[in-house]
Length: 255
Ligand SMILES: Nc1ncnc2c1ncn2[C@@H]1O[C@H](COP(=O)(O)OP(=O)(O)OP(=O)(O)O)[C@@H](O)[C@H]1O
Image (cartoon, rainbow, N blue to C red; front, side, top):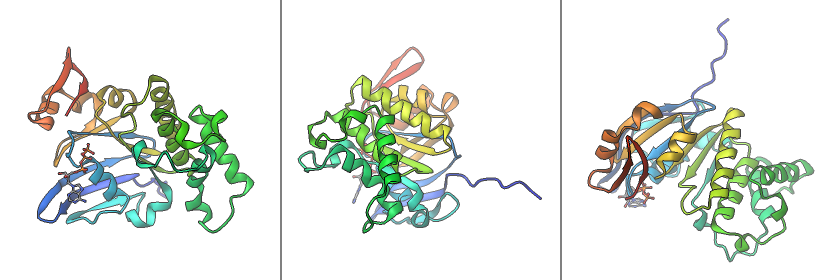
């Protein structure tokens, strides 16, 4: 008998998305294996968030196909976690850090059931993994932006995802939070989860991602980071936008 080969965590097949008459994404093609991370890199408005929303099944495709964990985005949803940009959760919302993380369990336990001891333990461990175990009782809104981002990552970790989607998680976070985020991504990959991260931070792509997808409505490259993330390809992707190149490595790309 053939050994069972796990399906790709994510398979993009000629993915095209339109908002009315305007194409936001055109013919995006690529694959992410379990245990691997891909960085989505491109200027503002390139379609990175749109691609993440399409993988979540939140925007319809004009053509092409997205397969998540061997099935449709809607069917795979339970095994997919999403970390939005930290400023999308109202910091004034009167909820504790522990409660935010516990929300990650609800897709598994159902919104109407009470969390069990195992769920609370999973939430506690997730918070520990992002280095914020001592903040469980603090109000979410009292944390710094970087700490809030880590809490949202802990919520995603608590969901035990097989595919994790992160939308610009390193925007404006402090060095400690950045390292905590990198460590948590590394651990998830070790456990076999795949990670998709949209970012402007090219150093992060080099550090954490085996693959990159260069995006500006259409695809300017999708492949192993060390051969795909070249200055020439980046210039093409960013068009007229400013790039900061140090030596032959691109450290920061502004847009
Ligand atoms: N709901 C929408 N309706 C119409 N157009 C949209 C909608 N959402 C995004 N767009 C447009 O689609 C394009 C891609 O936007 P998207 O937010 O996916 O880019 P992005 O790469 O994530 O940018 P950013 O880095 O600024 O978040 C942009 O031109 C944007 O204006």
